[in-house]
Amino acid sequence: MEREQLEVDVLFVGAGPASLAAALHLSRLVRDHNQSVERGSSGRKLQDLTLLVIEKGKDIGAHALSGAVVDPRGFRELLQGFPGEEPPYDAAVHDDALYWMTRNEAIRSPLTPLPLRNHGYFVASLGKLVRWMAQLCEKNGIEVYPEFPAVELLYEEKVVKGVRIGDKGRDKNAAPKSNFEPGIDVLSRVTVLGEGPRGTLAKQASRKLNLEGGRPPQIYSIGVKEIWQSSKPVRPGIVYHTLGYPLAKGEFGGAFIYTMQENLIDVGCVVGLDSPNPRTDCHLLLQKLKTHPFVRSMLEGGKLLSYGAKAVPEGGYYAMPQLYSDGLLIVGDSAGFLNAQRLKGIHLAIKSGMLAAETIFDALLKNDFSAQTLQGYSQRFEKSWAREELWKVRNFRQAFQRGFWSGMFHGAVQLVTHGRGLKDPFPIAAGHACMEPLQKWSADHSETINFDGQYTFDKLTDVYYSNTAHEEDQPCHLKILDFDICHHRCTFEYGNPCQYFCPANVYEMVGEEGKKRLQLNFTNCVHCKTCDIMDPYQIIIWTPPEGGGGPDYKNM
Image 1 (cartoon, rainbow, N blue to C red):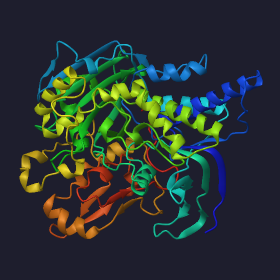
Image 2 (image 1 turned 180 degrees about the vertical axis):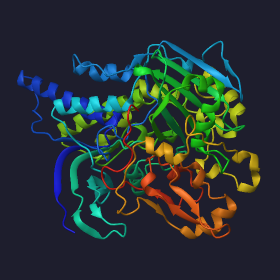
Image 3 (image 1 turned 135 degrees about the vertical axis):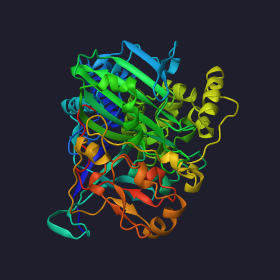
Image 4 (image 1 turned 90 degrees about the vertical axis):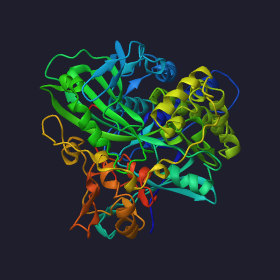
């Protein structure tokens, strides 16, 4: 098939904080360099550069989900070159606390642990932040294209040369419809992957270029959250974290509650995707959390506005892939730039983008985009405060694979030993490998609740509040490599855990008892990638759907 080609100098895949920060910082470096040359400095001007950011969502920010308590350090550094610009934070944090939750009690810790202290930080909507960043990009000559889902990396041998955009207008059997448009090939001198966690192209690059060779596996949690509008005045800037209920014994995770302007309350759960329980259901845990008297009192009389879910990369420093290859850099969540102890990554994503931009700037001056030049990104990272922060928590999340109290003990030791703990590196297994067979789990671990439609909601209702939409007559973007495993092995070994761990009711077992088959409701998909991560057989492959499909998060 003949495809249109678009040639750019630098391509940024994914319009999240990392890619947008990289594009902004690079534009500033080029601007300052050219002005310096005009004033008589040696060197050549970098003229007529095309910097392009592409995003799979229908709008910038449509797929941006985060609890978003922002450490402003990253933005402070980024905006030094853009005087007068201020991020659209919602409110400064004025109260934070940690609560231990039992079924009916919420016990406030007399001291908030240091990693959870948020004074000096801001609550914010990540969607608003990235929309503002995209507008700032456009003001500085950077092109930003939504509805451009990158589905494949383009190579010359093992040198990355750009990406292929997914086709539009194919039917469910992949046959062209009357409105068919083949996806274009975007060719670039260097491609920056900032797709978020478990990025499709980052996975492709890892396999072809062995970017994860010899490194521990990346592990993840899933964050699910709802935004409520309170019926009574709420002071913005409260940040509460909780441990205990509703999580099962030994399960990693917790909950968060933030307050924002316009009487908005963010409430959510974070649950480890290395849970041994095949019936782990993050959506159900969030609904159970809201029945707790402490949480329910905040939501009393309010109304649900929005729902969403997102994977969180928590493997830390040791699980980060090689950050560069010929013609390629990886930034942000795609590269594991997240502090799992603090549950914060926006400032680290911004810093990763800035470090990538500085490396690309050097490559543009040299006109050399080989791995030898681009490894400067990794070298800059190793000398940065981002590396210092991640090094101090390099074994934090790993310790929780042996149970909650084991993790708490090792976490305390790591604080004293600056991240080392009792063993460095602490051993870790891929999350899907931690799932135990169904027979090890009694029926009480599949506890459910009656959804009342007022405070608690089933998955389909919550999907409605995520504003998720996909073209129904298109190829399913969830690829299952072997349905026979689903029907004849997984049913008996794990009880088809996909029907539980998916927060959007994409995976549904239908039919008579003993003859059930797996039905894919792919139009429900909120793009959290939990299925790709937690499937015990690793036969589910998440790929980008037709451009513009997916959630459209509001106030997230």
